[in-house]
Image 1 (cartoon, rainbow, N blue to C red):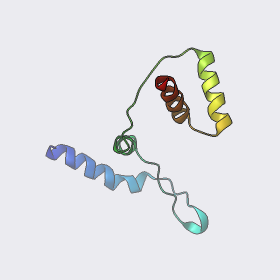
Image 2: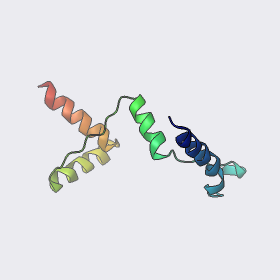
Image 3: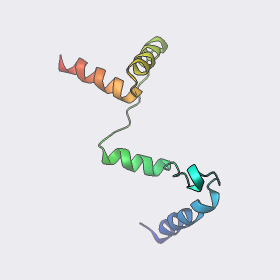
Length: 89
């Protein structure tokens, strides 16, 4: 990593405290900030997740959303489950 990139990262970390909203949690506790896209991507990669984009018909997507809502699961979990079942047999 180049020195310029390191300086940018350090500067971004220092600046994060200044740009966070002043909202507080219960009894003045600070709410944990949401992870940045870079941090989220690192977490997903650590779990072995790979982005996979597909184009589907609208009615099929509606069915997937309804199934996810019915099972109280994420869309990712539903699609993974259905793909595994389909590929297994």
